[in-house]
Length: 449
Ligand SMILES: Cc1cc2nc3c(=O)[nH]c(=O)nc-3n(C[C@H](O)[C@H](O)[C@H](O)COP(=O)(O)OP(=O)(O)OC[C@H]3O[C@@H](n4cnc5c(N)ncnc54)[C@H](O)[C@@H]3O)c2cc1C
Image (cartoon, rainbow, N blue to C red):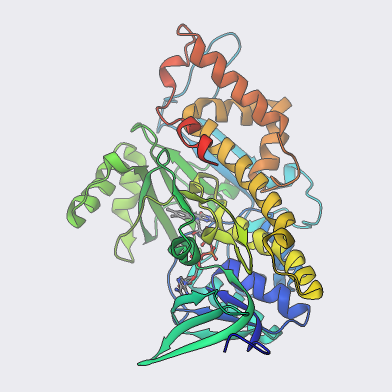
């Protein structure tokens, strides 16, 4: 082990969307790769609503037909609501009149390489299983129920260690791709992780059957959109994601300081939060809860580096930004799309030094920085977001970000405009939006990156 010919060219830790997509790209190019997945699929997972840039990866991997056959609900757009009756953010000043309701349709903007005017909502148990099976059929080896315990970089070839029953095994590879999600396997082992102390959000979520998704739908078609319901509690919101015709995923996101520790208290917190939007609470009480509540805690972070000698970090293993814009699966899939070309070139040159992965590292840093800036502006001043969406001259630029096209522009002009407007509101105490400024600012985090 570790010297001579390695067992596989590439070892991938984790069989979620990032790991599967990477295995698919490599198998398509004829590379001898293996995925280590600690769970036996299907397993439930948070992160059920996609953005359209995911379609490029499904198309590259010939996976779109399966997405259709699985009958995942089509997601044509998104709706944001702020109040059951009157808009909490309904203000008027110098022509600034944002509504409490905003909606977008993806078809409003053409996207290169995406020939559908919709994306999908997915049951992650089913979606992750289908994708992993698909890349297995494409030629990637898959070891399920195998939890990687350590990667040894000391030898000529890295050795991936895991247990099979009581026996410790090691598999040698030319390089390791960490796609272990929020477990951040290599980030922990190599001490690369920087916790995001600003976005210390928590979420509690479950599935409901027969929840009436039309309560806030202005059109019949909105029934299958994702809904983001702002709550009157600061920095808190509810997601409403269709899973099937009758099943809906509902989650409450809030800041750590609002989140109760005890399990029963957390459930109470869920119901208290939804109660602040009585129409939603009423519809939920009439529906049937299908699963126990599940919570996800304190999840945002970055890594000091996304690549090093003989390894790269993709998907959540490399970075997690707050899920307000449903970005995670798209980042996971697209990080595999960007990284695989560097990996193929490294195999060709037999050069696995960090430098070989700089295209991937730079592209992903740029994209996640844009997401992060967008999210920061959103949390700082929600009202600005609905204003920009409803303002025709900015609408398509905001939509471009919401579609997941964030990797081609170092400073998207619309983000610059949003930031300038936030500064104006911050500096002018008389501005009617001044009192609406949220207390989350990304400045505390930025210097570390
Ligand atoms: C509250 C919340 C809401 C979210 N909402 C959305 C949303 O609406 N839309 C969206 O796109 N994203 C959303 N996300 C983000 C989304 O869940 C992730 O970004 C996405 O799952 C990342 O995919 P991945 O492949 O990188 O990681 P994962 O999907 O987590 O896959 C990692 C895999 O690695 C395996 N693994 C871990 N450790 C090991 C080990 N040691 N050995 C072997 N295998 C291992 C795990 O079992 C897992 O299967 C949300 C996240 C949170 C926290």
